[in-house]
Image (cartoon, rainbow, N blue to C red; front, side, top):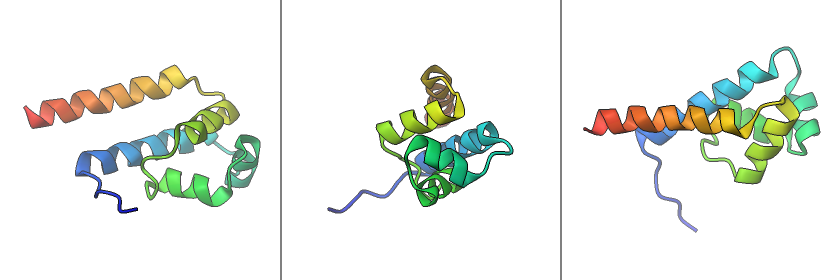
Length: 90
């Protein structure tokens, strides 16, 4: 399966999402948070660094639960990114 290349906006959104997760993780280790979410530390590392800018919904939901984040908070962050994208394309 060939994936279409991500747009610059999609890459920035992934980087911001990763930064949000890093901030929420705080002093906890990647290994600890990844284990609590049921994902590999490498998956979390890729998401946090923006190398996996479009993680699966269930991965996002599991990480949100492990970090005590509401999915509403994540949706709001993505909505803000979408507003920025729309402003740039106008």
